[in-house]
Length: 249
Image (cartoon, rainbow, N blue to C red):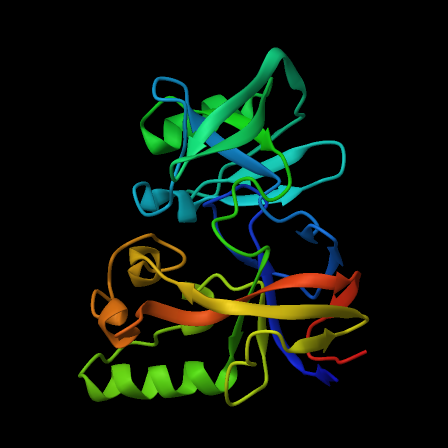
């Protein structure tokens, strides 16, 4: 039996680690959300894909797909637009959390602009679908779990707005009180996904989703359990389709 859920928020990041931006709709194909983490940034010296937890200023960058080129906007409002093209002999395998990610280095002016922002030399790369995704291709959180977490944080004395759904950088936030159980099939718009295991979290959720500042250092403690730092669930696509925010069809 397939369960239909109402979608409250959709989001993705075109370049891994950059600002997780809202979407009114997304397309799900067999690999997951189309456009999500299409690109990543690679440290040429270490051959490692940059991780947000080690480079929090990444979230200050807003990346947009303009069709024939990409645009990256820095916190000062400056936008660099440039084309991307696979570099000659740019096919590599870079380290991503201890596993090999298949990437293609890009010839693009964006590498220099992003390097200047980060204060270190990096190269923009196009990643094979799913290779720079830590767990399942889709991440899902529920409004019920977010509400309970928000109440717990407020009770602990934190006065500011947590903006929790953005902090978790979930593909989809659904209107439900509890996480669907592993193996449950859920209809999102015209797509159907199968729910996987609870998602392990890291210190990225402590970061302000716009500035990268660690302003909520207690958030990890609120998701800690005997099973680890778990919040939300992963999912995989069973039937591709289009998902629209706040609509079920």
